[in-house]
Length: 339
Image (cartoon, rainbow, N blue to C red; front, side, top):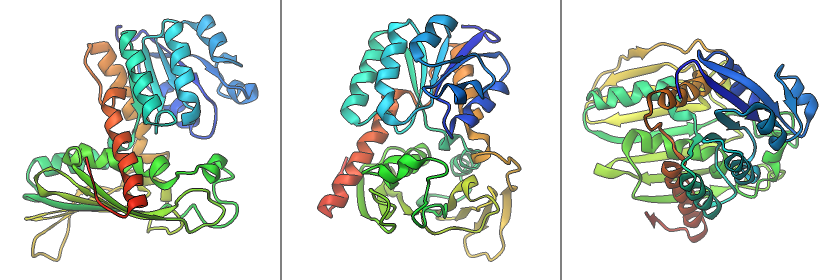
């Protein structure tokens, strides 16, 4: 595949798909060739050739890459349909398939077909996490000791929670970790390496939600680093856009602390000091997550055109799903789970 000749078709036209379509339209060398959704009106609203089924779209457009923008229940079927149609580059939304067993099977099927299968886990592509990783690697905080992220999107209160955006959130039997916490499973491993143990205490606060919507998860990472995911979807944080960072974070070491703020800025406070140094300013992007959707999609296109392996292949992402399952086992058994 060469730069300037990547034909992309998209499956799904729900709420989050808007960020995918917008990002693809801003990537040089990408040609969007179709949108498929059972809701054909939503597919037509993208402005692309619209199709009622994936099979119809693949037959009519012969894309180089399929972007699957659907909930987990539909991932396996869509990947298999694409493989049968000869598509050899596929991006699937997270958390990826209904469970680990299905994800493992689909990943093996894609590999057997010689296809590249990538999971659209975009939080590691948020610009502030790239900055934080670079600062840690450069020794800014000294020896890393621990990290904390406080998830505070403030969108989970009352009987109408999520109904205007992603109503299926209310019905998910596993919610906070399965749908949202996976972002920080992946982000923490991006920063510190794969965890070797987890401990979780999860709970449900809003009674209209089927699954958990708050809780604490403690990660043991290599070299003695600990990370804490403190999630509460009912509480908020100081930000003009609560979905920009979805919370606040601290990344602490022997020489100081990096802080992630709700405006997307990153600051550093040296050990023993009271003042802070701005490492990166507030993020100006008005859309989702510092334009992380585009950064991920550009990364995949660059990998395809240079014949290199992108981040977040399905094979790599299976680790995130195994950690997720261990978190739920920990919450059930009230014990630390070794990985």
